[in-house]
Each structure stands twice: as structure tokens, then as C-alpha cells.
Length: 147
Ligand SMILES: [Zn+2]
Ligand SMILES: [Zn+2]
Image (cartoon, rainbow, N blue to C red; front, side, top):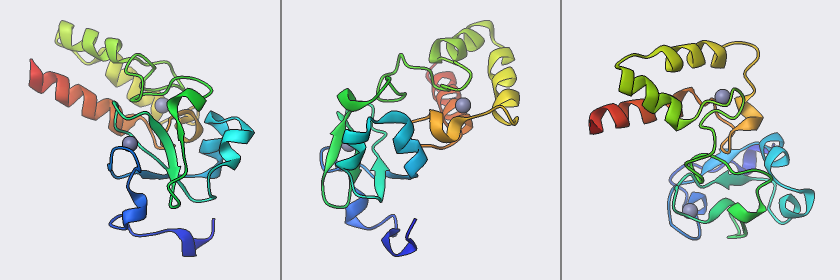
């Protein structure tokens, strides 16, 4: 990627044209994994993922071009809360809820071990191309706090 196009996170171009939320920079291989070539071609090389669950925009660029969740090859968390939070290993929010229900961390712990192994493919499996570990931890803490 051309470094000249990587803007500071405060740059207004990083804001989703629909919801105004801050987008996360995504790599080309992440886009290629989730979009058909035609949808991908409609975006500039430097694109962002909008992770606001209620916003229909999935990816956008600095030129306010965007593709919506309908263009995704498969539903992605958190755009679709029922989609696996970790697409590589199929961990779902309901699995995390089940751990909380039992008062344990068996499923979360087993998942974190897998996610840190060489078999993890979160880089292209998740919508933002980042490891799902942070998303899993965030969800766990949120749900635990809500109980
Ligand atoms: Zn948005
Ligand atoms: Zn994962």
C-alpha cells in the first residue's frame, strides 16, 4: 500500500459517509475476501471498514464511495450480530453467552488459544481484518458487565 494514502485517524476521510463513525483501515486481501471483484473495484485502494452494527455501510473510501452489507459475500460480525464473531473458528456470541451462563470461560479460553495459533485466519476472515481476540474480549466484558 502507498503510505502517502494512509491518513491519520483524525482525518475526516476516515469517517463513514453514512453514520459518521470512525472507520478501520483494511488491507486489500481483506477486501478481496469479502467482496466480489466488481464491488471491490468501486472502492479506492485505501478503504475502511465501518464497524457500527446498525450502519448499512460495510466498506468506504476517502471519496465517499461505499459498499453496503448487501455486497458482502457472507454476513460479517458485528454488522450481523448472528454471524460468527470469529469466522475462522466459528465462535459465536451465543457461545460466549453460554460461558457467562455457566460462570466459566471454557469456550472463550479455548477460542483464544486457537486464535493465537498458526491456524488463525482472522486477517482475511473478519470484516476489519483484525484478530477477533479483541472483539471477543470486548463482547465478553460488555455482557458480563450487563449481568
Ligand atoms: Zn457507518
Ligand atoms: Zn478469528
